[in-house]
Image (cartoon, rainbow, N blue to C red):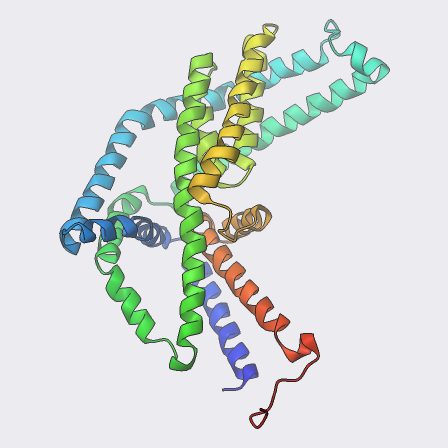
Length: 360
């Protein structure tokens, strides 16, 4: 097969895959979630097998423990988080008005020495910024809630996902062996090497970053609760979980928590600084301890590329796109680096023709 035919074949395959993904995006969530869960838990099953436990008992044990932990988390945390979320959404207008009063009141002269005659314009701009930000937040939360209830069947997600995860986890090794047997013999070694690179990138980021998010969510929630911040459990948990997207979760949590702290504690600025310190320590913890040890530096996913992939696939395919964004971004990165290596070694780049079959 010529190079042109190969390129055409793979481009058509990619187009068909994207089309199928787009057409079926409304019902793929439980299956993609089950596949992601099986991939995430496969190393645990392998370790239990090495300890002498059969694949079927290991799979039953892992899925059972996961379901038990999930159910307990829902029972213990879901009611509290839901009540805080409802109260937070209802309280956003009051917080916005309080921030506006804090920033625009003529009786407050705490910014005058720094801004002088620019103070009215700055106060007006900040007021508009807070108002627009609050409207965007409310629209996003309402859209997430209405869209989630309309597009995602909670029953199917809870029932189908564990079943899919169980069967995939049980047959994981056989599936990998079957796929490996389909590889073209001429390029098998190259494809295997690329697959290993993709697996290292995906596993290194997904499994490592999941641990980072859970630790940060627990830390932020506990820290904000100890400070006494309103909605501390909700804001801290969301900040930690959304840290899966580099910088986005921590920044959004910091801005939200700081805004709530100003309204709740001002003029007692010590507590506002305490809230800021919680996030500052969290950033140090993530940047110097958690990320280097759990994620590492060689996963091959640049933060900018990852953010683009998450937003692009999330926009195109919804929550299913968010689940597929990291694997597809990692695969694209590996293939791009492979193509770049081939290009740098090619005569087109070096200007030196390849030696012929008769060359010594």
